[in-house]
Image (tube, rainbow, N blue to C red; front, side, top):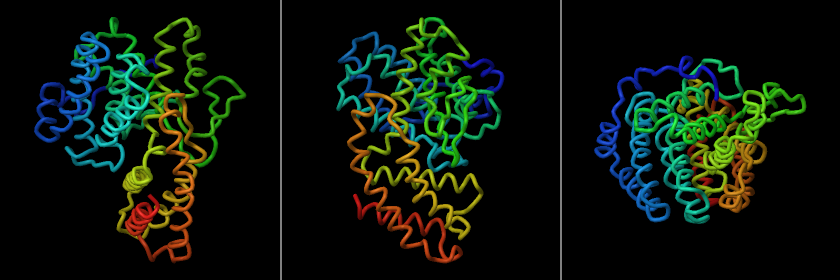
Length: 354
């Protein structure tokens, strides 16, 4: 539904080189056989609860999962040389495995339709495919997300899906990935792109605001069931993407540390340098508190049902983490500690508070 994606975000060198889903499956089997075991387990569960037709759809989805995971691992993960601490194949897998599995277990497989589980699984591996994009989309959707949508559509094409017959899946992934745009800028942003003067977006996920954007670019969408389903899935996908708030405090702290490390890398600061000390301290204290208490919000009843109790249990720990780290580093000269020093202290405090 976003016009011009294919032209604005064509295939890059890695996409051109990694075209074969069978080769991707082979690479995963060599380097991460546990992922193939996850695929088989998910297929068996879907077949048990939804029948052979969904199992066959999973077979095609599995090829798309493999291709997207390998491309992500080569671009920014453990198969390549431009490593990003957070936006890599491990983040995709934590959604695909730990978080979706938890929702299935706690809410039950029939909380969603079989194709919805497939769509969410593909969201996990595709929503962060591209990370270094600078093209302005002219939409509230981030450039990385827009590029990831374009590549996801080409992956589905290559893995046996059809843009006509499987329109609902293409649409769901486009809207889910668009909704994963997350605004973490310090100041509120007036998103007039929604074309409603009263809408002031103050950061966080785009997913809850997508219906207003669709009113602008695709009036009459309420009459299309596939669009309504895609918007509902976008809310669930947003909750899966940011479910760290409701996981164990160790997992929450680990994700914060990974994102902080990636942020320093993108800023050109070594974690071992004193230049990274103060920014790192700010990120894992005030930055983490702002994310947890101001920017994060549950978007779906399903996500809130599964993860809200964990978030409530983490709230005081997030505050105490900040208090302890500020007490340890806040009065020290900024040239006396590095980002790595802060992360070691953060890890120590996290284990103490778990």
